[in-house]
Length: 356
Image (cartoon, rainbow, N blue to C red; front, side, top):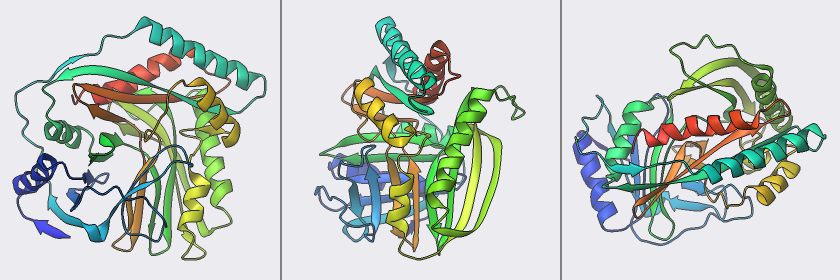
């Protein structure tokens, strides 16, 4: 991967690729200062055939849909260091995000259906989401990216484009899996509150249960594949204007060929689907009334520099013409309150609205 000494040169190169309508991805890992780019040399849409391939993967929520890869050997790759916060242009994009009362009522009704379903022992947890379409003009994609890089340093920040798919951007706080030299890291992330200036947060039973569901699920699904297991947490972490409960899970793979098996076991996790997974998935497909496509799928480096780093596609949006489509959701348990769940999605939407 080519190292560029000047961050302006980095963005100039990416901007030229975007203007030629060729696929690219720009990303920065959590709490790091390096920013990377993979720019495909052709407009070909490459579908992942094997998890032994090398490149940047972009996977939808549904396991039955194709996973896209930018093959490493078919891309120009380069990197630069971010030494300071970006100085942003003074131009402001014009957005209209007036809330639709019908949309609000519909989401609250769907959430209440899920609560009733769970209380009648239909499931333990179901994650329901919605999309919010925001009219916007004069949006500069790379200014939005720089705002995300400035504001969300502990998130995986990315901008992904393919002319046959579209443009997606996000600042996700959730790791799906990292593997380096057979050392595995993953996390359980659940529970949400607004950040009020402190990480000393009192968590309610609903949030504690929700987080424990995710932790237990991950441990049950990887316990036979790893050794030297370590579980650290739960503890409170900040993600933009929100805080979450997080548990870190670490271990060593028992064999070197378990990557696909582990990803298949973990995705979709209860943090973006529910428990039991098959029942929650069925409920989501029947009740959400839209196709999530790449929202709550996963993305990241696959077998690059002998490591794999994948994150869950949360806090994300899709830019289409003069519209931004925001995707937001929340975990529903028997202790949930439908109105509060709507308010949580509004708070999560603010993370993306703040950078438009």
